[in-house]
Amino acid sequence: MNMITIIWIALPFFMGFGIYLLPRFDRWLALVVTLAAFGYGLQRVLDPSSLTLELLDHFGVTLVVDSLSGYFILTNALVTAAVLLYCWRSGKTAFFYTQTIILHGSVNATFICADFMSLYVALEVMGIASFLLISYPRTDRSIWIALRYIFVSNTAMLFYLIGAVLVYQANHSFGFAGLQGAPTEAIALIFLGLLTKGGIFVSGLWLPLTHSEADTPISALLSGVVVKAGVFPLVRCALMLEELDPMVRLFGVATALLGVGYAVFEKDTKRMLAFHTVSQLGFVLAAPEVGGFYALTHGLVKSSLFLIAGNLPSRNFKELQQMKIPTSIWIALAMASFSISGFPLLSGFGAKVLTMKNLLPWQVIGMNLAALGTGISFAKFIFLPHAGEEKAKPGFWPAMILLLGGLVAANGVYYQAYTFANVVKPLVTIGLGWLAYLFIFQKVKIKPSRIVEQFEHLIGVMSLMLILLFWMALA
View 1 (spheres, rainbow, N blue to C red):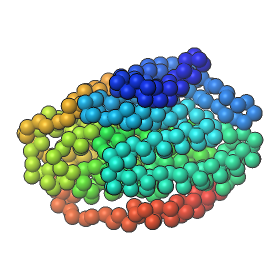
View 2 (cartoon, one colour):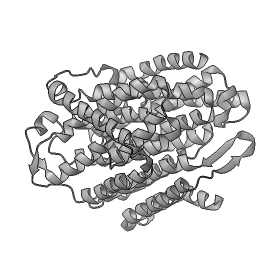
View 3 (cartoon, rainbow, N blue to C red):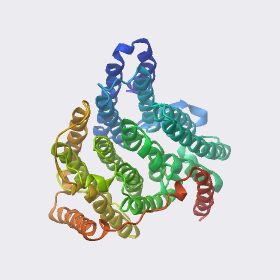
View 4 (cartoon, one colour):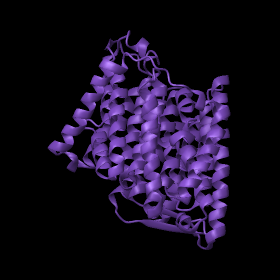
């Protein structure tokens, strides 16, 4: 199994560069990589055992693959495959497919790293590939968004690297377990880097503009899997070190409420989805022991929603309310919206029930408010008029079949959720959300301020977060 794991890790990078040698087969080579990742991820989900690979014994550079990694790897495989199908007949160049597969491989690498140094390398490669994909359209706007992303990313990783060095200085090891005996400033610096990369709480407010302005398939990749590369190490650390669990859970609740607080007032479809990416990542962190399943469900839902949003006639909700979108697209939109809201028969239901059952008492009120806000937000999609002619892009439906089919299939992961009490609660929450939307939020014209999202404030917010993290770690 060790050799299979090493081959699987190296495959995306060999195939990525091999695409340049065989550009006629670029899409097929890329698809082979995602199929290999799907098979490997599914095997790890089904196998309860853990696999550990020590790369450098004396430095604690270690890879760990278990069922938690398997859920995240499976998410990456399905989302990347859906994006490839969506772009199949779009005329994308070999450069696009190369960067997509390198991004896929580097994101997978973050899901198996158990030390801060190998994680740093994987995150940096991921950042470069993301930058190149965001700037792929080569417009002034896309280049600016990409530069903004890479600047924030590299600044965050500088803080992270300093923290990793402090961990090594204290323990002579880069392993995650070294946080237990590390100085307070090391914990604060590492958490700041990961929170920023993952789009968590106020240090992740770079995310809405980046994800909403990127090209549609890139938005699906960024929100579906890329941000989870920053979230996964936080989940892993919370499970390994009991003293870090309350901090991670607190950021989960705060992030869920912050994201949904913006989303309920947002009038732009892609910005609303981007803010909900922030919110849903909070659900992953709020219950680390079941975060893998929630990450899988969110990845499938959010990537499908971004691909659907790219095929709507407008990004403005007010304009969409005056149009009739194609019924077939509305059905796909409704399925994804129902799933993320926690409606039964889709995996979002089981993921939300499982998450709520693993909350601590002090988290319950906040996470229920976030769930109610999710129902309000996605009522905007549910109540759109529909009956228009279909004008979806050629690769749209293959991608939808894969993603929405995954939501139906993953519904069986936690079939124990189907009890009367568990079914009634989300239905009531969704119903209250719809009523609140129809009678209150549909008529409200509040426009949230974008000051904190401005480029010149992002680094300042990081500094404030560092002070907060230092205080929390000290406490």
